[in-house]
Image 1 (cartoon, rainbow, N blue to C red):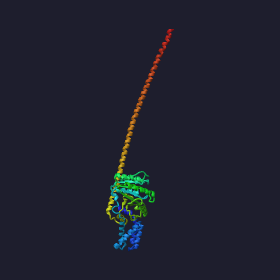
Image 2 (image 1 turned 60 degrees about the vertical axis):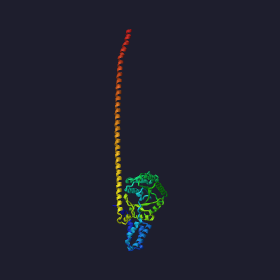
Image 3 (image 1 turned 135 degrees about the vertical axis):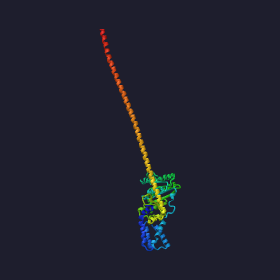
Image 4 (image 1 turned 45 degrees about the horizontal axis):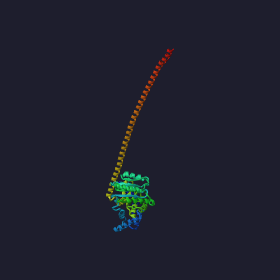
Length: 416
């Protein structure tokens, strides 16, 4: 399944909610009048496109219908589609950060998918042969650092991290210095999830923002807020609160494949003028796609993609990404094999050393036993020699005793 087909599949729930209702309106009316516009307005608002965006889209539609003299509702459906595309167009400079040395900070509330989005962005950038550094500044969630470390291994991006509970601003500072030293193309900063109504956490975000402003130098800055599409209009409230703390340049809209409220992508740009730059329509790395109004609206209305070049380019990027990930995996496997070989050699060397030591100890023991045997033998010979000498002395004494006795008695006999 190609990227465009996956996008269409991911927007199926939104399509059923919005496009199904729009088709019903166009088929139910035989003429274009106020009732037609009222029904269309209600359908768009119910699809989370928002009041302001709906008003602007319908105002543009009325003008074009009048200009072209259209009377049949079915004939103005394409005008509505074109109006939505124009409302969501990002312009030519939406992704300037990819083409110059930059620092991208991702912010948002808990559970919207910031860490995963950092990893997927790293994968997309690595597929373009960019040198990427990731900063693990979410030091509060226990698994965040481990999760980002795993993304680092998968994508081949560098990672700067400290221990859990460290100062996030200090992590960002270290990462910026590392990015300068390594001449990285893009520094991606993960941050902790924070509720937009918690003043102390928002103050901490301001601190991080100040560190980036002070240390980034001439790096291009991009602040992306990650919003969960399933929250619908609540995402607008989050965006307004974060916008008061830091300048937000773009939006990553996640979990589009699990909601019927995908119309929020239109509402956000109309309400606050902040463009949706990426949308997530699945779990795979390539399911985080650059937002293209032409492709998005075509997928939403189940039309064929008219921008085949962009679709082919995305497919090519996906191939490079798979190759990069495979290369990373092969490198890890090779590194693992080399490590095993080194460990095996070290183990053999240890066994050989133990064997040599055992032989040396064995030789020493044999020599010691031989020396002990020789010493014992010498002592035995000395003992036997001593015994023989003692026996000879006793024998001599016995022989001399009678001689002495005979001479004594003969002396008395002669005297008598």
